Amino acid sequence: MRVFFQGAFYFYKQIISLLSASANHFLPLFDKNSGSQRKYWHNWHRLPPSWVNLLPILIWSIVGISLRLVNLTAKPPWTDEFATLVFSLGNTFLSVPLDRAIAPDILLQPLQPNPAASIGDVIHNLATQDSHPPLYFVLAYLWMKLFPSDGGLVSLFGARLLPAIIGAASIPCVYVLGRVAFRSSLVGHLTAAMMAVSPYGVFLAQEARHYTLAILWVIGSLICLVIATRHIQNRTPLPIWVALFWIGINALGIATHYFFTLTLGAEVVVLIFLAWHQLQTSSKFSLLFSPPWRRIYAVAIGTCVAGLIWIPTLLENENRGALTEWIRGSRVGLDWLSPIFQALGTLIAMICLLPVESSQALVVIPSGVVMLTFFIWAVPILLRGIKIQLQHPENRMMIQVLAGVVISAIAIFFIFTYFLGIDLTRGARYNFVYFPAIVVLLGASLAVCWHPPQEWMETEQGKNGITSIGKWGINGKKAVMLIWLMGFFSAVTVICNLGYQKYYRPDLFVQLIQQTSPTPVLIATTHKTYVHTGEMMGVAREIKRANSLQNPLFLLAHQDRDPNSSTIALENTLKQLPRPFDLWLVNFHAPVAETAKKCVKSDTQSLPPVDGYEYELYHCQ
Image 1 (cartoon, one colour):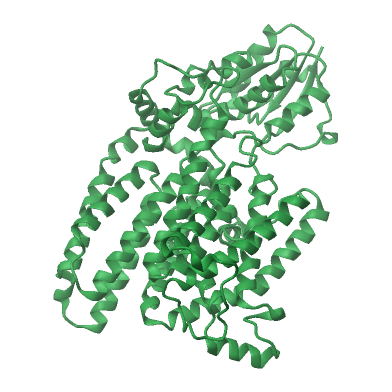
Image 2 (image 1 turned 180 degrees about the vertical axis):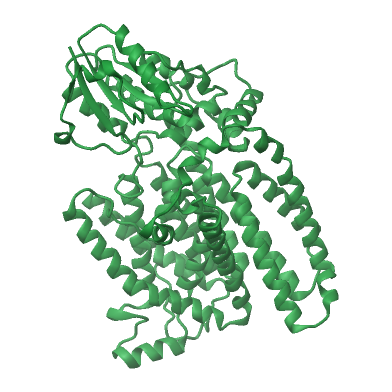
């Protein structure tokens, strides 16, 4: 690990020289004759301008894909990933028997590749059993055919590789967004650099889910919004190809994740602000029917049509309420403040995340102190960078547009949370709807740090007696380096499962069973949706990999409205099993069967807790 970090420092030192050369080949944010300019390091200036510009993008992409591939399969899949695996194979959870004891191989059957399944099966199963649109699952269906099975089951590496590659593809794409928005290659490079090491971006890219693909569509839609903003400012028609591209991107975004509509909602708020701003400068209401606005209205109509085609699918899906039950619920007392802290925590973790989720205080406390110190130092610098960008007319509107997207999206989250009773802040992954805008704003602020204006440097020199842009005498480029390195270390925290930790740890639970139960085991849980099937699939998969338990069995005791139905299923199953065996009740939310009460209940307080698995142990002799 020491060698790894030393290599990271050396690597970044070399990148600094390349980025400096690249920045000077394009329009800088401030005067090139500033005393803050330095000569090129090494001989990067001898490269053609196109190479000097493309090479950093390639390097950031390599850094990004490398971080996203490290420990790609080290963490066990969780319930949502099992849904991706099963539905992308064209399989269904309905094939898993309920209310009777089954072997692990039967429970894992939906994870076996199905040569007879077609794209039509993928779409049909999603429409009838899940709450997501099919685009990503169809791509995953085609993609996973390229990978051989792993012990008879679908390849987890193959399933996670697709979002990792798509996540890395967002790095050059967000470069385009930064450059188009601020007409600055430097902003684009710094935006791409921060996207490469963002712990939030790495977190999403290492899960077999559709969020990285949705992020690509968000970036594309924001690029179109930025272009539209310029045409509104200049009162020129939006090119037809941009309008068609915008509609296509929005249609693909909705077909990837329904929450992409939250991005569209935020964009609508921004466009309303632009219309209001234009009316303030000119009292002619007819401006709202000028050529740029007419094309934007056409984009809105096309996007609405692309979204409305999914309404029948949503209405016909009987499972959508049960699958989203976890983000619904009532609040009491301080629970009303939880969404605010959850949203703030996600924002912070987009930039910096050290091992504050560790179970050891000796790790949590220093990590928290370092993060707090970092933000006390970095936040004033970043805010001042944004403030300086706002002073430049050509950049002010872009800052307002991107910040408007972020603020509007967060406001929509809180409307859903506090007024509709759907707490979207509980799922950090849902913040993909504005994540690219945050990264571009970060890149724009860091660009000011990279080439700070003369008046900023003179002010700071007067305060501190040294040339710096903030506390502790750190100059602009070193500040950018430190912020990037903090992102890098945060990404390492995520890939080591010390940050954005998995909700479920079936690997630890299986280890606990191995250490505790010398006899055959029955693992029983209550079942409502495929989420609970996925919880047990995780355990069964780890048992299959360990291959050490003797004849383990599973019971998915189905429960509709009457909890006693699960109790009856458990009672009937226990009467049929030969003894001795150990009964593990895992996430079992029903009265315990009388037959189980006759077994010896173990004192589980002496046993360690396991994330995602609340358990009770009974020894049945």
